[in-house]
Amino acid sequence: MEISAGCLIYLFQSEIALLIQWLSQVPFSRSIIGTSNCTPYLILSNTTMKKNLWTLGASLLLCCACQPNDNLQGDLSGVEYDTVLVYKINALTYNWIGVDTVALEDGHFSLNIADSVPIHLSMDAKNKYGEKKVQILYQNFLFFPGDHMSIQGNPPYNLTAKGTAIYDLLASDAEYMKLSAEIASLDQQMDCLAEDDERLDTLEKASDLKQKELNKTMLRFVRTHPDSEAAAYLCLSLEEEEGLEAIARLSEKVRKGRMRPWLDETEAYCQEALALKDIRQQLQPGVTAPDFQLKDAKGKTVSLADFRGKYVVLDFWGTWCGWCLAGVPKMKTYYEKYAQQVEFVGICCADQKDRWLKCLKQRQMNWTNLFQEETEKVAYHYGVDGYPTKIILDKEGTIIAVFEGESQEFYDQLDELFHQ
Image 1 (spheres, rainbow, N blue to C red):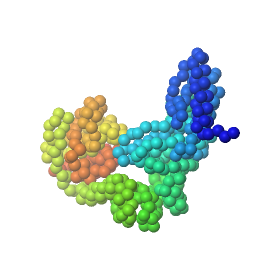
Image 2 (cartoon, helix red, strand yellow):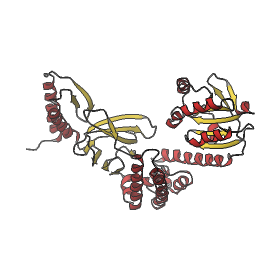
Image 3 (cartoon, rainbow, N blue to C red):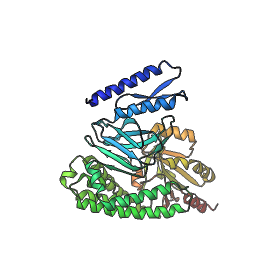
Image 4 (cartoon, rainbow, N blue to C red):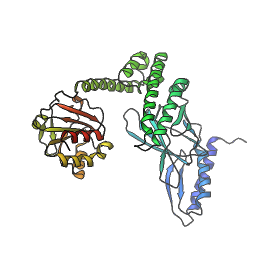
């Protein structure tokens, strides 16, 4: 006698219903922590019953979850956790969609992605009894409606996707896969080292060289496969001249196809990056800094010209920037140290005004602080493409030095200027 998949699912759901009914008769608490395609699963707080009951519930759940319409499967090696969290973000709007919680059985998981829009997939793993999560996906995968994808390998750095037109064609290029794996290995080594480890510099240089090789390989791939979405997908990873060249080589069909939103976005980014690069080349030490007008925390309009006759530090930052916030204590120290000799001017960029005002108050950033509205382009006219960026000006408004990132060199330059 044959039993249909629907009957099996019904039987499994009935068994779980009986299990839940039985649990209601015993004196311990329970809470639903997630759902599969079929039914909620439970975490039990009674330690003497947890293991056996979870095994039964998870087994039934797994049988229910592995339905024929599951379109995302994973086979992960070296993962010591039993639950996978699959995060979904709308790839067009970048809005959060949700998270699916899935049982991981001997490294395997399976679920159905039912969304009707392209999504970015990322994943974490955790144990069913704990909230501690670990990243198991080093990169995001692009998943279109109608795709069937299999994710395989050793997370988080050595995972590959298969089953879709994009990822299957990429996997067929041995040189691309080899270089991608080598860069992932270097990144993994760097992540295991402390920030002051001398080996970091060597590994970063090696990674940069491999990335240049990979960029050439991706350009070659685009030239070879101009009619493929896989080529369009690689264009999204290229920058400046290489990105524009790659996009220009795509066929019109691909250029105007379903990859178009991201290609348009990448093209605009590359064009702006080149424009910023040109501005930075012009704003070298010895050049007069462009004037600007922005409002401070009280709504007063402040211009760079207001500080003529004083040394000025322009600090481009944001409350969303971890390195910017990490540098605030030292900025406060140097502000107090040189307040009589130099004017500190913070310029908050790409931020929300209420968050900016709250940060100023909480962190007691008592120097001049200005806010750049979305329509204002002060950071652009200074060629800023990374945060924090600090620029020292002399009394005539001439650029002395530009520092990208939070660096000791900036503070050393202030000490040298004022002979401390």
